[in-house]
Image (tube, rainbow, N blue to C red; front, side, top):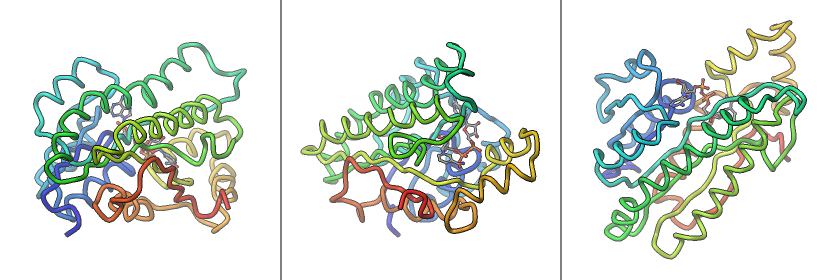
Length: 248
Ligand code: NAD
């Protein structure tokens, strides 16, 4: 199993790609700390071998420090949490912008900062440790309508990823970003349901995927496992697109 003897923390693990990753990492032998701010969603992971759950709001700075003190040193960190603001620049209030920046970028910085010292200790022992940051094809890679705050913050994730990768590459700590296409998750279903015409909205999401379908969470997990495992030991600072060909 590719994640034997690895301890991995995953944020936003209650549903969607985070939840699928928690299950996939545990199935590959990892000890997984699955965290989320939705207690009910998190409870669906209770009792699964290899998974321990923790309530954790990624925007809570004090809880971030406390979690890093409580948990053992990590081999893997998957910063998965993120939110989608729907709107052009003309629709974004300062509060919307602050929230997107806070959830999508600042929390990632704080969590990485809190856990990197322990990850460096692990890398010194094992030779490698891996941070995976959730970005998107909607970032500096490609612009999409009504995704200003989202695209800007996911672009910032790529900058943060490369900076961390550059600073720690000689110490065995790698840092990469995942850039998914449109993935069928509960929040995507929520965005479709909230549209004026949900049937058309789903067609429009599918139409932007050249393979003619939405991704499933299981289209993402093989790459997530790859980037958290030693299989990717020579890969750092990369924005890995798993987007069904959108950015061909
Ligand atoms: P989702 O959006 O359905 O679920 C996200 C989870 O994040 C929820 O369980 C929610 O409780 C949790 N969450 C939200 N704010 C949080 C906070 N402050 N602290 C802790 N947990 C919090 O899942 P998803 O669609 O798989 O999205 C996960 C990540 O993937 C996000 O960063 C998203 O931007 C990114 N992403 C999604 C898509 C897509 O099409 N679904 C595409 C590219 C990137």
